[in-house]
Length: 406
Image (cartoon, rainbow, N blue to C red; front, side, top):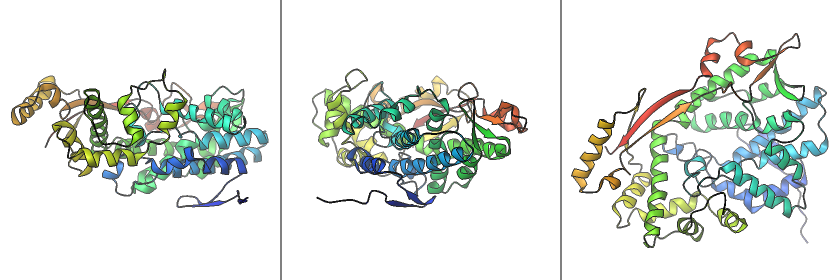
């Protein structure tokens, strides 16, 4: 029987050497469910805008676990009690927090399955793994759900400043080359503390928090909501929508067995059972790309053109506006397309459409970032900061866009 050294080291381009803290974490990383994350891109189709953005959910999950190790060490140094079981649970929860992402991450979250978020699918993966690992994920699941009796542990997993955001901002800015998004996550973690079982940032870390929020705003407008990325994402959602329509009409499409299953079945939270979970675990970016490479030559006008646009990066034109797009503008572009290609209005709507995007860097109404002042008083970042921009960042900004063929 083979024996493995389970305390291996990863060499990460962001943080350098990352150690695996225990053998259970090693076994979870080795599991096929987690290894699948190597084949799920962290930023969907953003590489069509930023060629370097080919990093994966696997990179991100390992990075989050590393930052969680730093956070635990910092808090223990400040005499915050964290038991060995809680420590292990934190590492498991943050490692597996994104395990439920489908192909191209957020781009296809509501295309392959309906009415069930990636967080809910992550939870189902964790429950399945918990059975496999004899209940050793029970506490991690409690913390992940946010119903553990020590709120700060849940906040380290999911809050306005958690280890997830601390990693993805730094990592995504590195791989895209967008320097404005680069944050000093280690400095921020060093400033963490706990008051009344709630996570706070010490006052001397306030400028790092301001930088974090401004960086988040930059990254959303420049990267996550970049107009070219938006078009590509919308086209990808429409590819799946059209593929499902054709399949329902009895048209046979070449696709992997896993993708074919989701084309043939309407999956929602109600019927997402263990069998569906297992088939979902076989889906990754490769299934979608391979399918689109085939479908770009299909006889269906809509499917072939949508796939061709993504594969060869010949995307739709997009215009962003500060005010809602007029119905007359939308109709004009739809009618032009109908006239040119002699297609129906419903078909034309695959290529001409309007939508809106919203960005709110700081959501002051829930899970606030709390600043621990030297006096011992805890206040919200908007009150502690002398930066007018922080108050502005807590207001949502909405933009409207229209897409149509060039």
